[in-house]
Length: 409
View: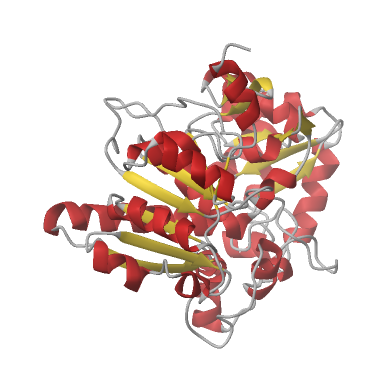
């Protein structure tokens, strides 16, 4: 048994924020049906690399889900969605505000048929406010939230965070919102509407930056790998790369001096004696530390720092990360079989449950793979389903291929 066994989710989202949310719900056991336009499907299906005409990028956040290819602009397509919604616990969408109302599948419409529905909208800027109607991808949200002005090196151009951080923040925010609303529904039977955005979710993660601004008017600037409030707490050059050192308190600082760098005189040096002094003289401290760290390779310094009990690590390239023995031992890279991609690797599950361990049960579906199965599940007959295929209301990318298998060809 999985934690969310029995939860039924209709996923109208694409690209990353919504699919990330529903991926985690599906890992937890929810029955997630991804509803896609056709013939192209979720826009992330267009992102390479491709194997046998299927995109690897789509496969990553869409495991454990079914795919129903449906024309939501048609009356019959809307009727199909409404029938599915009557039995659902959760609907999640990321259209621009107003689109679901025009399609007749918005929260106000659906809750008349299913008062217990939890309906979550993710958009660039939210459902209200002067920017509500604007489109918003991750890069737009990174600019609006100030992330690009606090990332990179001092004096450099604005820099994007290396991952789609606002997308993931919005997906995570939608996730905990849905789980909270689901608990409320289990207690009361009542559903509700949830509204989050890439901007709101990303901004909510700027906890320390907001404290500095509200407390003293400080506007966060790019600091490279440095911490704004502590040092030594950054990446330092070594003979063959970089090493991160996290000496975030006085005790760890003294261990760095005494047991790692062999510079005990720095402890009483007025320029470095207190944390405030070290932060004030961070440029000088970096220069002096790197005069030492560049004389030996990264592995040498990590060994010394580990022995001293000072948090430290290498600065990997991504391929090194995915081949690190610790990452592999934590099952963060797993293999699975995909019907079109073949044997693929995917990221594992980052939280380990002792009683109800989460599962990667099936690979991402091809476009419309579960169309027939889904419609049969809500009472459509074989004849009705065939007619809907012929009318272009529903779709299965490999329908002819599957029909050939069924007919013994």
